[in-house]
Length: 254
Ligand code: PGA
Image: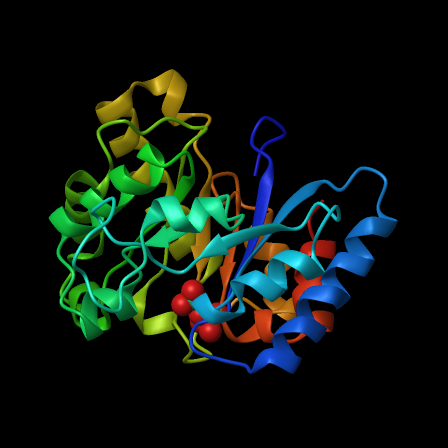
């Protein structure tokens, strides 16, 4: 983290929670956020689609921002079960996660599709959190860096700037497993991502892009990870479902 890049603490609720849980969680975070005069982090929550409306109400005027977990690449049309970036923006989303490894696996999303989704979100006036990350097999065969470089090259929207794009490095083997990347492993990949970004959008812009770490981030390991030079925040799953844990992660930002 550097002072020029504002730390982002983003909660990915995934397919969890019912109406009452969502409302309680969003309200608890909003209440705490409102008490801070000048938070030194940006907080985003990404609930499941049907909870976006009530979460939006619960965080109103609190400074907590709303994000979606995905969007479609088309602006509208015959896409049953999908949601457009335009509608997400319309109901209050400021950002959308695209390319999460669970979507890449569960729905066979390719880099090209992730890139198209990112373009759609930016086109609708939102920012994007573009996720990349290697599997355990890829890491063990020494391909972690090349896999992340390739995913970034394929998934980064052409219109990417530091304002509209955040990258999340999420090693697949660390997601929901309790296994967290060591600070050395995280910093190494984050630095590689920033160098690759510099080639793609120029060094000056790349220097301003926030790169989040995701994968079993918890109150107990957040401080160390968030203090690494190229780690500019966290994309948090499990620990984002508990207001105390999620807040403790945010509170560990220096
Ligand atoms: P986790 O999930 O914090 O539960 O590992 C992170 C993510 O998938 O975004």
